Amino acid sequence: MPDQYSGFKSHQLFLSLSPLQLNQQIVTEIEKRLGLSLLDKDAAHRVCFANQNAELQDAYKQVFSADDLLDYVYAQLSGTKSDPDLGSALMSDTLIAYPDEPLAFWQQVRRGHSLRQCRH
Image 1 (cartoon, rainbow, N blue to C red):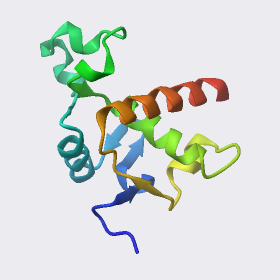
Image 2 (cartoon, one colour):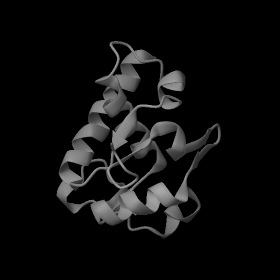
Image 3 (cartoon, rainbow, N blue to C red):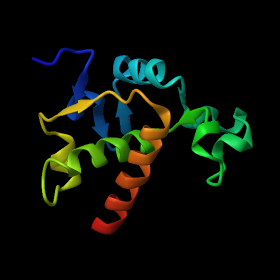
């Protein structure tokens, strides 16, 4: 049986979708596992421009955003259903594995972003 250290349920991470609010305990665990920091939208102006550059190679990224987490989770959930509706999928009880490797995390973020764009 999975424990709190192997994963989380998406509805545990996303406390609210509008505005997007995250469970800080889960975010802290993700930060620790990836060695990255969550970019606080209020503090974005204090972060080096390089971290916000879309052309920056994944290996050099130091921060991720709440939207990146949304895309990561969506990519993970897309494998469990043929055509997940974002709102209902994010409130599911499906266990989402904690990301442990930054390059794989960014790959899933891109995949989730593409999937979400296709749904609109």
